[in-house]
Length: 76
Image (cartoon, rainbow, N blue to C red; front, side, top):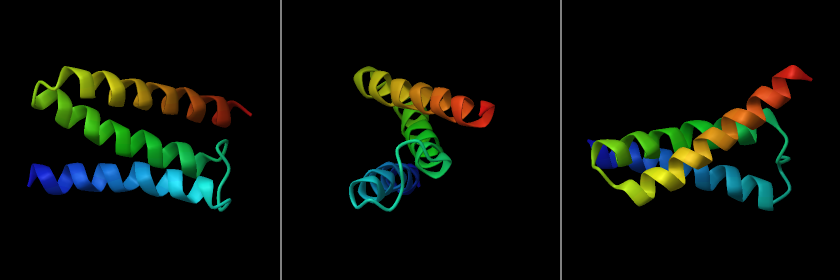
């Protein structure tokens, strides 16, 4: 079950990146940052559970940067 959840998180991050590269969304859009926040957040949680510290650093940072971008977007 944890593999299915981690694949879902990865798909969210990759889909956001693909949509950005295809010009379908902006890197400042709430959808892009929302997808990154949830996808990276899921992966960070799984990394913490499985004590994968390097992966937790990567995905935790990605999650925090996405939160910052969402807060910046909502303050506009």
